[in-house]
Image (spheres, helix red, strand yellow):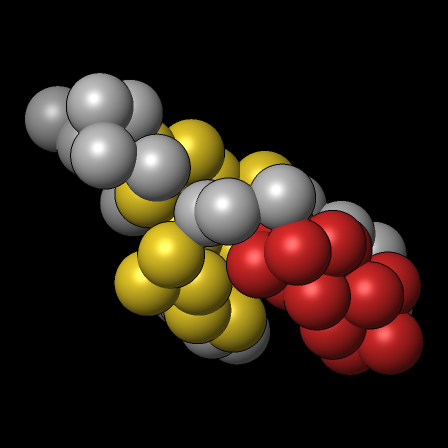
Length: 52
């Protein structure tokens, strides 16, 4: 996941690989986005609960 700001907006983008995320993060920085961060997608455990 890539998180970035441009002063008025925030975006969150998802890429399938770390390499693709790093490439997109560099592009965003070049276009003037700031606070560009890459974070691993949080893994949610599925416990089999139905949520009831």
